[in-house]
Image (cartoon, rainbow, N blue to C red; front, side, top):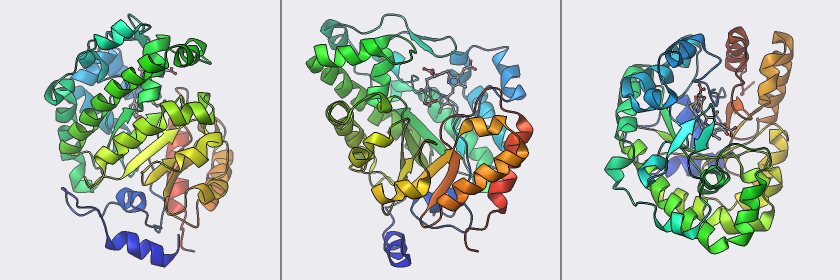
Length: 360
Ligand code: 1CP
């Protein structure tokens, strides 16, 4: 981004209900070509951390999510170990769905008790009041924020994109290619749109409650967007994602969009009103910039690099950092931290990213 464009964006920040955005992560998210790339990792709170496993041994996943003290503790754990520039609140993309009347278990991924396959099931979904969706999450964000505000580290809130939520609800659980879901879209387009409409309303309330509780940025996870071709994405994903981002415009939080395995969709994704695009590892960031001029790019180290050696991590992280020059960049993985990632490799990555001066 040119310095003139940076100045224009800096000159017109959206009205922020919070303190001024001085945190490195927020400056980069708003489009500033910062002196150093801020760093956080998707799934930074999770199963590669022994202190997470210790809590998990005593509590179910839902207990952890629904007990604000536990959720805040788990959100803070990676920040105690590593010099990260943002926290992500510990929860799940499926968290708001029980408020619609849908029963969900985790084993370890989400399992839907009664997968949605009929129009009647969709019509029967409740429209919850905003306050009932996830009151525990608002408390967890408040507790996490209280611990981090002295360090000026922001908390990221998040939700699942409607099409990705529908993928689990209709398929019923994780799958490799989600064939049942992709067939359902074709067989029952009207019912699918009705479901996506309800998920969009729910997601807007859910994300707004996180912003009201103090989340300083919002990430929309569209983990399964890459399954689809252009026309399907344009019909079943784009309008709903756009509606969510539009509803969050002007609330003073940068909006981050993540789609995985979806570089074929970038020309369509470019139509979304968001400040940050999170990219997986399949293409270098400098090849992606042209699709998203004036946006911040987030990513995009292959998570499996963290399973290799410190030398490999240094080399590949430098490649990502170099490719991220020429515009705002938030360093992250292309997808979540893998469960078997050695802790010292995460520490090493943090050192490499922090030592890289983007101005020299
Ligand atoms: O067994 C366990 O310990 C539970 C594993 C686990 C964890 C740690 C699940 C079940 N969810 C989470 C937390 C989680 N989920 C976070 C926490 C914050 C952080 O990143 O540190 C976040 C952001 C999510 C988001 C999420 N959940 C996504 C989007 C990100 C992605 O990986 O693409 C998805 C697809 C889910 C569904 C889900 N929940 C849990 C699992 C194992 C999965 C994936 C299942 C699958 O692969 O289909």
